[in-house]
Length: 323
Ligand code: PMV
Image (cartoon, rainbow, N blue to C red):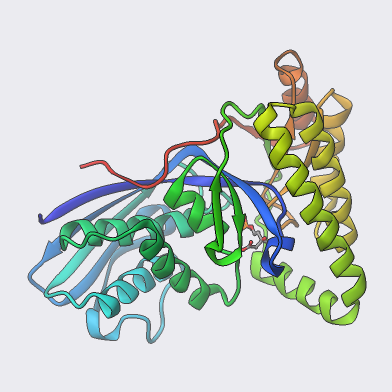
């Protein structure tokens, strides 16, 4: 096969961010906004990337030098994914990779991890390698870790497996949860989260106040486990309450922001069962859980507070070969 087109979903962290980096569980859902990657085999021994959404046009590099030198930000994840794949499964020839996204790379839906997963899945397809999901996870997570320095891999898992997952860092546990139609409302702050910066700040806090931070993480782990049960039961009101508790802990950890807080307060005043930030914090999106009859009022409240409502549905299909 010479060409393969693959897509993978973006994600939203539902509960357990930050604590998951320190061995606790989290719950993540794959959303119906996808990254699309087309890979074509070429005779040259180069990687060519076209990714107009992140300002990459005609970027070309020899396969041997992948991962070294100056790499533009928009090409980073694709380049590392290709490099890791070729290192593990030596292949002849080069590839042309085209990436397009249904969502902006600015909003925190995990476009980098989703494109990394797509690239590895598509390479496996064109080179006829039958890889297990676990093998794809290992290569993709390694690529992401090399670029970011740290990270639990929850976003890689969401892109790969899809659905709603109970996840422990590094893929130690990846448990699909039988839930559908999570009644989510999503509000974008308009601010890009600095995930690496926040991870650094939290790591510093862990060094300075290990007891306090450990207490917070243990409490988050407990509420994530409670939420898992309540989600399966469909008790969204209770899950909303647990989101509120999670947000209290994240605020204590210092990763919330004024903008996030104002969207969260607006959603709750308009009748949400609960609301919290989603992801590293500092910006990106907040999420709320709400009954159908409250949704409209909550969406207007988020907009009045300066947020942008994004319509998504949860538990979407993981990476798939589209053509
Ligand atoms: O900022 P995001 O959406 O990539 O989420 C980061 C979530 C963390 O738990 C803080 C980090 C991680 O890799 O789990």
